[in-house]
Length: 446
Image (cartoon, rainbow, N blue to C red):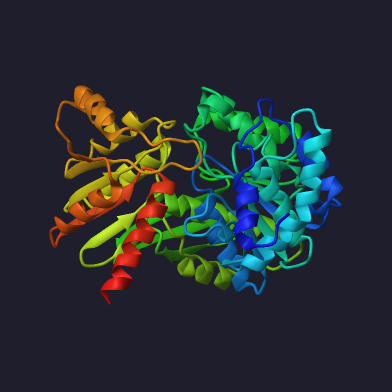
């Protein structure tokens, strides 16, 4: 039985994470037992290796400027579980989490008994709770972020108004495939018959896969760099300037506090998804909503400055593609700063390659540490990681190793110079822990 919020979370987190044979049949059966709530949800579906969360945030803010109530489904959470299901950026209540868990619980028990492979996984349960909540009418439009891949992700039961694929890069290769075209095929699984798809900046080979799937599905496709364009105009005072242009749409100048070329790409994808959605729903495309929505967008954990003096930034770069973008940003906009990077990385990622990439930044020193990974996922051993990286780079860029991340954080924070920057990165789970720790220390000092 579930009577409290804590019991609800224990029930959810106590479920199996993955099944040996992934399938959408179990999710479809689960939702049908609940009355098919997904069929009463108007949605935009967002997939991609990186950039899903930022694109969702930009799009949510634009739509809100149009006066719409916007639901969102994201993962993982940064501070509290409730963030995963939000309305206008505000997480739903503990009472709603408890109520929704109570609603799905008897169906889960039933499917545990009836299905040979067992009942729903943790993510399937959370997805079902989301569909159940939004089927009650709490939002005009729901932005749904894919959990993993696309084709067999539990969110992929939805028939959206627009599909979005932000980026294709190296991550979850043991599940999605060992080449970019294979990964792209999984992401392209969200494309539905005759539903338009908006695509970000994607390399030629994986893009060809996406275009082929769109053609087979008779889905109109808009591609960044071909059908719509973005031009960066530089960073000023922690704001990124850029312009957006597309056919039959005037070039507009924009600003965002989410800095980096990759963020302007994400913003452009969000703008185009908004335009396509409006056009298909016979709604006006409001240029002021675009400008205000982009300028007001914040997204915790994406090159987020959480301290001014000294400057401390957290970023959830958790794979090679994301680290590449951070390296570009550091090289282009922070080449005159002394940068310390504190990294905690999950062991099932390409941890050594991630550190090696960071080590290519000339003005950087790297500190490695360990944190408690989610569930059974372990963090990479920082001492072993240091040996691997130093044997490959030979430049001694790894300047310190700590087994305790809190001690590591306190040490590097205390050693920061007035003109230095501390970047904390490597895993969304790691930066979630550090963000809470630093903000609580700051609050206790007031």
